[in-house]
Image 1 (cartoon, helix red, strand yellow):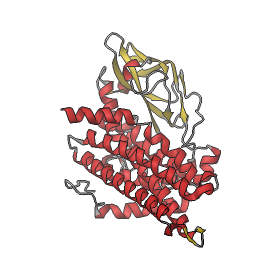
Image 2 (image 1 turned 135 degrees about the vertical axis):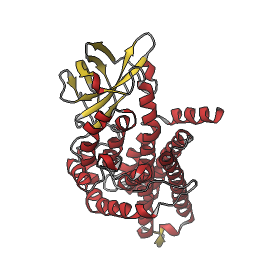
Image 3 (image 1 turned 135 degrees about the horizontal axis):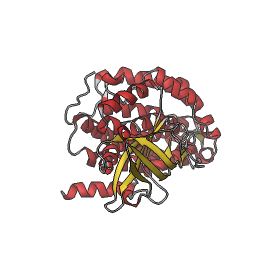
Length: 384
């Protein structure tokens, strides 16, 4: 399918509307009714992942030659947004589908692409991306995981932290130092069934409770040379080249959460009676709802522009993806807090979804590069 988006176009291309509408139908019928239970039980929704696979949602990140839809970044992030309106945890299924596959799609060999991408597109296997460590979050140079060459194999030792899909993924894209003197990093594909690999304990989190986050460990894990992604010693380029695109997923998730909270608060305000009239007729709440809608619309416009730039391979895409993630994440936090305020006491209890949305929104300011890191990226791009 044609994925080219003209410069400056913000409206969704006509050909994408049937995809979006089909995803909305799936979300309304299957995701939204499960969202509260997923959060309450903290269980990964295997049933929804299967449903996404059966309806080609998991194929959205991939080119047609690998069994994907070939619809590009914009359509992918529209899908993330639509799912996140109802359930941020379920949106992460699609987000990590891109995060754990993009290193192979962008930097992998033809053999690696043929080995993994078609099976990812069908949902047969699931990926993970393992960069962060207990002592190395925003600073990859502090990484302690090390890989040493032994004949035709690499031996990996170390530990990772904050890894989405831990215990679910069939393989992990693992970043490890391969030269301690120069701090050079290399990217590896590590299948989950390799000896010495342990997916580790799972975190108990504030939000996105239906998406497992864990701490995998590597104890003399051996992988063959053909599992190296890109060039030896150039793994940081693989990581940064991936994250400058996948941070758009966090932005899309944030836009979805904010729109879901706005819609719920607006509907509530139409029905809630106080002082003899619906509260949406009170100017104080009207202004709050107006600001929520406006901020979310602005975040969406910035997101869609950045996505269209990614599809065009615009050289300023990295700057705009950081701006989209920064603005959308901060907006999601503001909007969900305001949604709770609109609902008052009802907003503070689990019977209503906005408290869950607020807890889920917080992570969009942290992962895929913190808001502080995004500001550094933007400022450096401005200084060039």
